Image 1: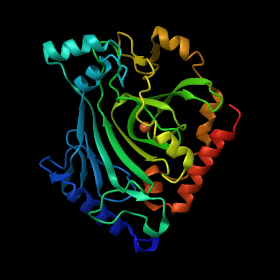
Image 2 (image 1 turned 60 degrees about the horizontal axis):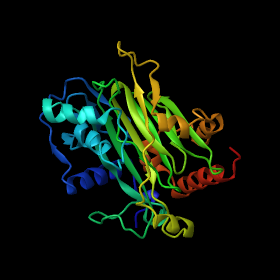
Image 3 (image 1 turned 30 degrees about the horizontal axis):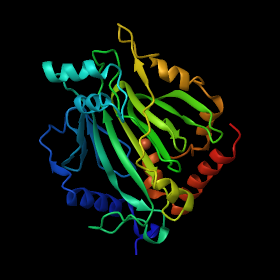
Image 4 (image 1 turned 120 degrees about the vertical axis):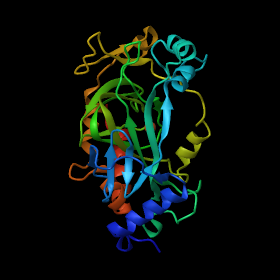
Length: 326
Ligand SMILES: [Fe+2]
C-alpha cells in the first residue's frame, strides 16, 4: 500500500523517473550539462533546467510538447474559436506565407504522476492509467518562451475556461508571467483582472474561471496543480454533461508598445469584450488569493502534503467562493 510513510524523497524520485520512462518522456541528454544549468526546486532533488535544453533529471532530458503559434492562431480563426488571438487572421497568413511559426511554449504535462485524493492509495500504481471513476490532483510544468508577436501581443498560452468546481494553482519558478483571469462570481457578476507573478508567487484561479498566461520575462517556468471535479458530486456530474459545450474565449490580449516595454503591459479588449467585462478589476476576487498557503512551495505541497490537507484546501476554496459575497 502506498502511504505517506513509504514515500521518502528517494522513493518519490525513483517513482517519478520510472513513470516518465514508462511514458517514453525521458531521452538521452546531449546538452552540455555544465552550461547555464540551474537547479530548480520541484520538491525533489535532481531536477535542473537549462535555457537551451529545457528540463533535465539525472542524466536525462525530459521530453516536452511544443505549442506552435499556428495551432493557436488557426484555432482563433475559426467561426466558433476556442481561442482568441489578437489579429489571428493576419498571423495565420504570416504562418502560411512566410513560414513564421514560433514555438510559444513547451508543456510537460503530468510532470508528476497524478495523485488520488485518497490517502490509502495516494499515487496511482505503476503502469496504471488514471481512472475516470476516481478524482485526482494533477501537476504540469510549462516553459513559456519569451517573445512578441508581430501584432504586438506577447508570447502566451492558449487560454481556456476551467470547469465550475475545478481548483487550479500556479507557481512561477523562473522568469515572470502575467496571468489574466476572468469569469463570473457566484452572483453572476463578470470580473477580469491580471496578476503579475515572479518566482515564488502563487496564483489561484477561482472556480470556473477563464485564464491565460503571458510571458513578461522569459523563458519562464511555471508549475501548476489542478483538480478534476469529483465524479461523486451530483452537481458536478450535472455540470459534466454540459462539459463540452462551447464557451466563447474572453477577447482580451496583452499588448506591448513599440519599445516592447513589458513592465506594464496593457490589456486590450475587443469591442464586444468591453461590453461584457466592464468590471475590469474586482478587488474582492483578487483577495481570494489569501486562501493559499504561504509557507510551502507548490511542488512540495503536491508531492508531500497529506491528502486531507489538500482536501481541506479544496473544500475551503470552493466554500469560500460560493459563500462569500463578492
Ligand atoms: Fe486551467
